[in-house]
Image (cartoon, rainbow, N blue to C red; front, side):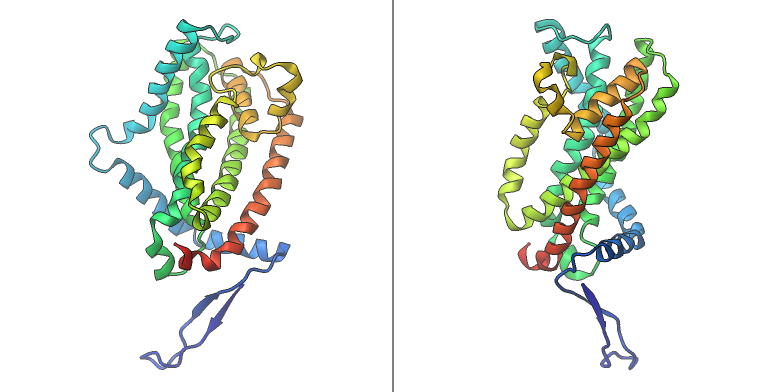
Length: 290
């Protein structure tokens, strides 16, 4: 909840707008108002996203190429382990192409969360100098990860061309699949970022959690390798579903199961709304806690 107060002591003798951050009101109208305020600060989100990218690649010899180097390096390592040391079922697709299509969306998800959680604590002066929707800080890391994903996708195009994987019209389904993945990443990012302000254990435990999440997600292996009795549980994880559908659309040209895509979208919204509400409820105390 915010209010505006006048200040008659200004040099011009006119009132100055002051925003007071108070306890939030939990209602649909309040959430809509917060989202509308967020859109009004879109230019700040743009500026902070550019700042993230410039800082990340500042004084780097390879520059923006680092966005593609990480998935390429992981692809080489996983190809050696899972294509030569042990065999993984890929349904006739070369393993480098198979694992790269899993790594790209996974790095988008995990990288944005790993950076976003630390964002508010890393820049405490932003919270005390001016007002803006605090969720812009973790969302700027998410937006920067999306840009990194687009850069690394150029490598994916080259890999698909090398292995002669022909695109189909079903490739258009990539847009809604990634949209849901980004939405879920945003929900996790703002939730963990808000909790991390109060409990710094989150930042310490997050790398371990993401490592477990990686191997519980069909990134380096196929969903068909999972026993059928537990395969349905994978549908409850939007990340696992998104990676499996992304790979199926890009490599095999299959249209995704729309009911599964709808379930993924519904689960993302169910998780996003309370995560955003919790973040806004913590917003008033963030400047004091960091």
